[in-house]
Amino acid sequence: MNGFKNTMYSAFTENNLIPPEYFDKYSVKRGLRNPDGTGVMAGVTNICNVHGYVVDDGEKKPAEGRLIFRGYDIHDLIENSISENRFGFEEIVYLLLTGRLPDKTELEDFTMLLSDNRPLPGTFFEDMILKAPSRDIMNKMARSVLALYSYDTEPDLITPEHEIDTAISLIAKMPVIMVSAYETKRRCFDDRSMIMHPLISGQSTAENILSTLRPDRYFTREEAKLLDLMLMLHAEHGGGNNSTFTCRVLTSSGTDPYSTYAAAIGSLKGPRHGGANHKAITMQNDIKANVSDWENDDELAEYLRKILRKEAGDGSGLIYGMGHAVYTLSDPRATILKEYAGKIAEGTEFEREFHLLGSIERLTPVVFDEVKHSGKAMCANIDMYSGFVYKMLGIPEELFTPLFAVSRMAGWCAHRFEEINSGKRIMRPAYKSISKEKQYVNIDNR
Image (cartoon, rainbow, N blue to C red; front, side, top):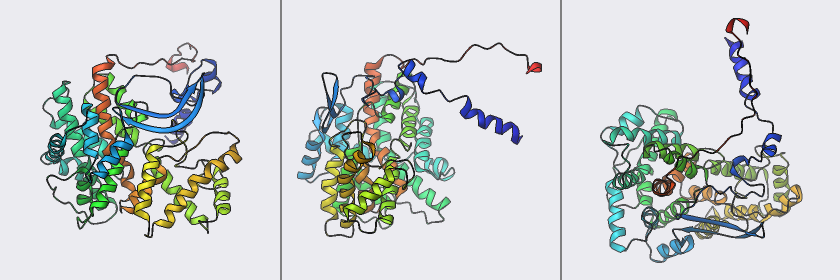
């Protein structure tokens, strides 16, 4: 039996590896990327604009990054919620789902609507989470969203009413599923106590997460506002990112919302997508352990060179948290997060680490050019500072990507709505077959 299985194992690579020259021969753009790194145009959207470069006379040129939700710049959305001392995530969710900003009454009603939709149905926690625990929170979140299909009396109904109601229900329940999956994982796999707090009506999403996650339920408003900022920054990032594109692909088939959103969570789980924040925090910990003087630019730069030369770190040659598929000169999410993280870290035990991250951001482009000689414009992305912020909030590392999913559900819902109303055709790109025809051989003669 082992020999038979080994044959199958070897065939995994032998029969599934396409020689690289075929992609050039047939002008196939791997990863749906053009040779200059820009994305292949695959759709039109009114939801989000991720701006990171300009194309002038056919040449891609760097530009300051901008992130625009339904026509509103992310800086304006965040700065106004902060200046008015209120939570902003719910406003952004309403904007993404409806295409317009809510007035004060609408925002209050919508926040309460989300609160009312948070409880999980009946014995869902016991049947779907506690009895079937997972070591991976993202896996449990995807399975839970898919399982909610069975609790919907008309799960395959595609109408405006059903889509809106389902979206609100899932956006509201995602934090509860996340915390429930985490506590169950602690009890079943970490031999730790499982603490399940009752929900508090009327809380914002950020407040709900902290009040159910912390054993003593205590948190400051400043902490909740910082988490709220993270949720706002992660809520949406255009139709071309992998999980959102996954959402639109499944939607184009006409399948139900639960299948669609579960698939998007599965995409975000990947280390090349939402899971990249784990890579960034692991790399940062490695740098802290191997650079004795964090304030010595020469020592830090030399270790960054070793990472790029695959002599240190995880051997990938990547400095995680630096560079982006779209942003060139700046990632607005990283810029905003860095500003507010610096304010919170000042005067605390986290201040030294914050300055280290700033030095990594500052030195990497110079070192990268020295080693790679590419002349590529490079900036920090949101992963450079997101794990640091979560750490300041005392949030465990296994919840970094799940929190991303909690926030991004709003963007996925908006893109599903747009695909339903505007797509009208199942996505069906072409693949060039290079296999040669073979004569069938009878089983006795093989």
